Image (cartoon, rainbow, N blue to C red; front, side, top):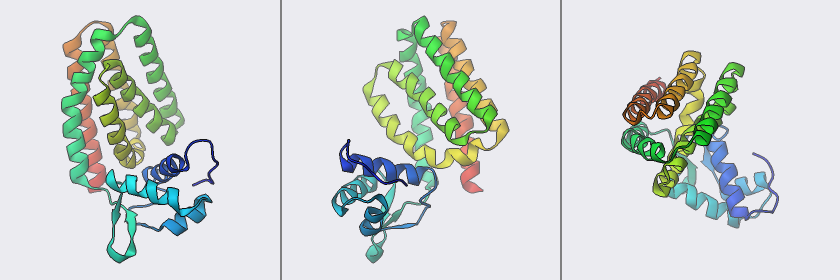
Length: 217
């Protein structure tokens, strides 16, 4: 967690830095968070930390722990199950909507995102792999043209980040992920909308199984 400087609002900066620390494991589940300690660490006043923590609490990343104040929320298998149930319904819709809007330039961008993810996988760059995975799916959501899908899934992916590092360290999984992404784009390029929807749904089912196994372990 780095010191903050002032261009954006300090609340926005504090929120982003604390959220990143939670998602990448720097702040571990059940770790206690106090406004004073976080403010000292980020070299800002308590007020932006207070507001950032309130937002993170509302989004389920931190929780109250009685007199101890706040702590990082534990990984909740029920929450991840709910997110994947939602994804299995919403992402085929996003792909169907994206198919109606996709032009060759979009497909070229999508293939470059796949190539970027494959390169990160070969380097075993876990942070890069997570970022590439998120970017690929966010591209599909944005191409769908449905802003509700974009904003809802943007928050859900922040929760998913908390488990992705452990899952993507398994080389067979991280390699398979990008083959599945490429298969979705291939189907879109062939104007096989039904095939693209089926492939994204199968991809999510496998991802759900991978995350469930990781959480149980």
